[in-house]
Length: 400
Image (cartoon, rainbow, N blue to C red; front, side, top):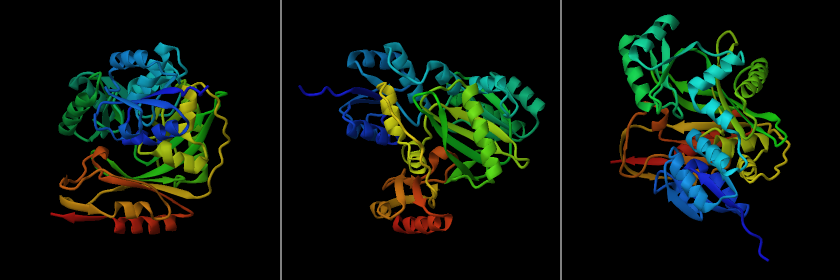
């Protein structure tokens, strides 16, 4: 008798989740992919597709009850991960835990939970009116950061240094906050750090990768490069990795992947920015972490969803990886060439260009408007720069 394929439901079929979908197919799963966009790039690789928002829990539950999955999973997206946990919980399937999803899916809940765990973090206030935002800024002192309670990435996040900027920041945060609530935080200057990790199926958490970021300053600082390992002292790395274990425990995360962000100030203090119970976006989880640690996150997520054993022992790679973001000259695009050529350069592990022929390139005002990125693996930083220059030279934009 032919062995029955496991039925896997993947919430979110964007380009970020293509590696997860491909791994599930490679491992013999029958995959139903969902996404809010009928043209989602991941739909090309699934067996069935349904257009539905990852925030439509009622609609997703109806779909899941009809599909009867053996597991539900997602990666690199807060909305999709929460939906996967919720649907799995309702169907009695294995999942990362609803409490952890709640603790990490809302920035105010996360901050409050971390406060109980005595985690070092910026001063913060939850606000639902502009008056409350003004009072919070007055208490904290300028500048402040205003952000939504519940949104992914840096959408609706702004730095304000005066009342005019504060009003704009409040309006932006409310617009991007699904709860319409905002958080006002003290602005910590320093080096931005990320730590990615995972749990084994005995409940042990491993720190798998630590990186430092380079940013373009402004009211909405834009990350232009992420470098692994972090370009900080070994002493600071040790302290941050220890802090990350405490954060994961305080937020009651017990399964799956973790992606945490910190700021290391000029006094070597490590401040928590946020933590998520999912892998890092922009293929951090799918490509970068496996290179650095030997742990295949896509396989781990798939087996977790199906409640199957996934044994691993991290094997750390003694090299460097860079996630660089493309920011091209503004103008009307006539034609882009050389992308396939750049992909074939040794050391290039992934490329995604977010602009197309005929479109107009504009200067990014936030992370979501960057023009693309490249993931490079090399033995040292000098080789990273050589590979990046080759790839950048290969990609040519002809302007109209």
